Amino acid sequence: MRLRHKLLLSFLLFGVLPLLAMGTRSYVRSTRALEGLIGQETSQIAAKVARELEDRLDLQESDEALLGGNEATTRFLRARAAGRSAEARTAEQEVRAYSAEVWSAISENYDFVLLRDASGAIVLTLGEPGGGESPSGPLRRSKRVLRDPENGSIVGELEVLPRLSEMTRTPALERRFGDQGWTAIVNRVDGEVIRAIPDRPVAALDLPVRRMASPRGSLTLRTPDSRFVTSWISLDRPGWLVVAAGSVDEFAGPFVRQRLVDLALLAGVVALVALAFTLLVHRATRPLDALTKAADRIGAGDLSPALPEPGADEVGRLTRAFSTMTTRIREMIAQIEAGRQTAVLGRFAAELSHEIRNPLTSIKINLQGLERDAREGRIPEESRDSVRLALREIRRLDEAVRTALRAGRPPAPPRPFDVSAILKEALALLRPQAAAQGVNIEDHSAAHSTEITGDAEAVRGAFVNVVLNAIEAMPSGGTVRVTALNGSGPMVEIRIADEGPGIPASVRDKVFTPFYTTKEGGTGLGLSLALQTVRAHGGSLTLANARRGTEVLITLPLRTPTATA
Image (tube, rainbow, N blue to C red):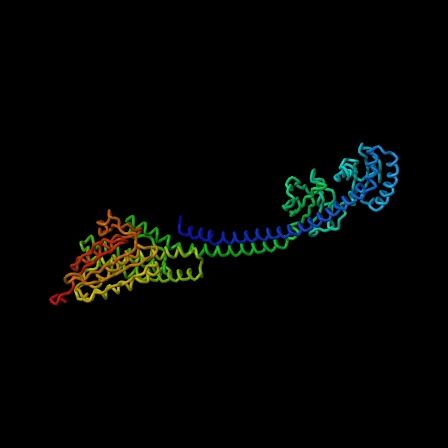
């Protein structure tokens, strides 16, 4: 996948999709909150209707007790059961008078009342058994067995048919939540609507009575016109469901409109930003594509590739440097072919340093600024890895240039210098990079005599290579301990130890071989050049035995009074 495609994909994954996910999540949460609010209101309405219906049922039981459980009725039925006709006729007159008085007070609530004796014969009728509203409808007849309180024997039965219109006439049933809401009483057995306020919405609603098997609950139902949150309460007697519903769409309209406006604005902003980002990425990566193709052609042996027009930014400077570099390469190859390999290598290194390191430094400074912006939250957090990757590649290029410089530069005339001071300079140079990687450099140098003779710049480069390897061995952070002590004889010993994973025994003999490396993107020249530099100064560079990590021991001969300055 090309770089620009990766950047665009990253923008979509970490910029656009999170915004869309947040918008969708917010919409879902607001809709669920609205459904929860409607569910609470409809539950309260259903509960109030259920309480009023239960009060009506309690009143019915009280009426049945008045008619069938009084002393006169019991005495009358007991006399009939015992066959005492004279006593029964006397008690019957009293029962009829009492029942007529009670019936005058409760008749509006019932279609009829039948009193039967122990044999099942009707001995008293109140109301009109054949003229009821719904003798076989959803409101079933209530039958009450009458017993003799003295011995518990059955003496008769009271049958009552409540009047449906009066039974379901409750003030709470008139309430509903919203203009499109409704309240209803439903037969739990067959789902028939007994009474509803208003009638029209309920008639078009197919209530899932089987899903309403629990004593109470709420669910969301959809109709062709709307969506309802429906709450119900189940009554064991007479087997009814009290249902109250509120329309979600009635109250969600303003939220939906505002959400659509917000989503439209968000989509517009994202589209504009995506377009600008796409154009910017295309403009920024187009010269890099051309440089990549030119590098591929150089790798194939073509030292005259087509290069993009250089601009005024860092990429333009890199293009000019690349062009100069290819020119110098062609010149150096011609010189190598003429037999001047050493001079050509030195010139190549000098030109490489002049033409490449300056734009690399500028690019590195700008990337470090972007890294600080990422840490301070001014650019997306997801961009930090890309910036770090670019910084790491810049450091690799810079190290490659420095290695080329050291490899192609002729040795400087030997001069006396303080190796401790050179060591401290090398450590000071690497501390910023170490701190950025979470590595702490500890200097425990305690040598009292550290003056040697040689090339100070080359020795500093050797120290830098060894310490840099120690830092890179701890990508998750750690400590590098540096110690300089006077050894046995006129020698100074420098120990550089890290807390990394260490070097396997199978490759310890190979780490100083030129171009051998175990690091991704490494050149394999650092330790090799360090070893050559130390040996050129009459010293040694070895791997010491360490319990943890890797420890490098460098020994250098001290300057004697007879040493030549």
